[in-house]
Length: 119
Image 1: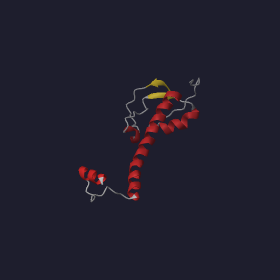
Image 2: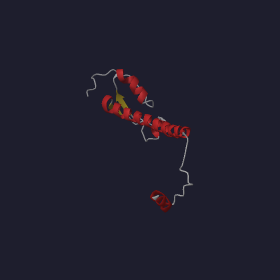
Image 3: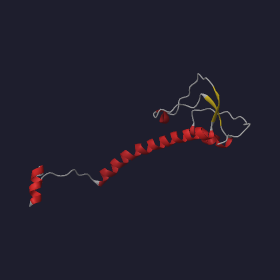
Image 4: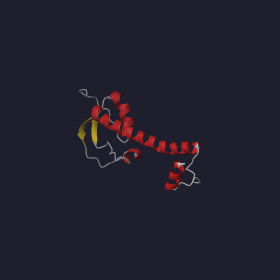
């Protein structure tokens, strides 16, 4: 009895239905939220991998002033990433495939190295 009096105090009249939705609607909403979040996380991982590669496996050996600017891929540009085209980088030939994948805007010239990059 006392529960009913409290329900009247807060304005619940028993005829109000709580918000309802189907399980299918829940799945659709979760999918619509998770797809863009998954894509965003994939792009942020690409950014992280680029910066980690530059910090550990690349070394700038010559800065050049180029008038030709190749834009960074749009997926990275929306996060403010700058292109890696205005320097000559020294990379091991074993890491060249990974560098080409991480830096598609860069051009590569293979030059024999005199000394290895040390960590």
